[in-house]
Image (cartoon, rainbow, N blue to C red; front, side):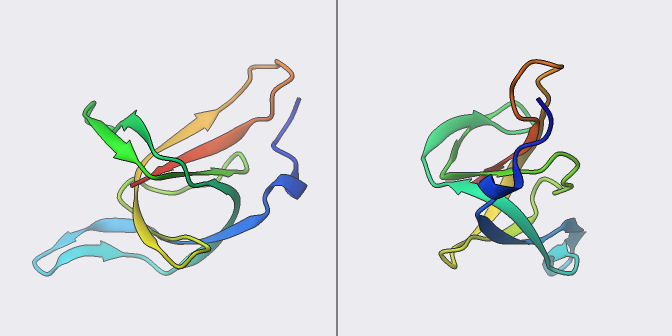
Amino acid sequence: MSSIPGWLLRHRITVEPYRGDSSKGPVYGPAQTVRCFVDEQTRAVRNPAGEDVTSSSTAYAAPGTVVPALSRVTLPSGRQTTVIAVLPRDGGGLPTPDHVEIQLQ
């Protein structure tokens, strides 16, 4: 199978890409809208440092979507959250939809 079908990407999230830290706190780039499917379900995940953390939601986006860890995200509900990790999901030719999984705090 190829990419996740566009008709499944029913939601829009606003992503402000994390650019680093300043003396006043995190610095974010310009906001961009990303089409995705949002699943608001609490689960345990590992962050890039290997620590167990709690994810309150997951967004599934088209392959190639770039969202840096620690980016600020506004969900369709208006709730703001932070990206824990971004994982490319490639079925390697199996009949599964390729996508990007965005784990959110």
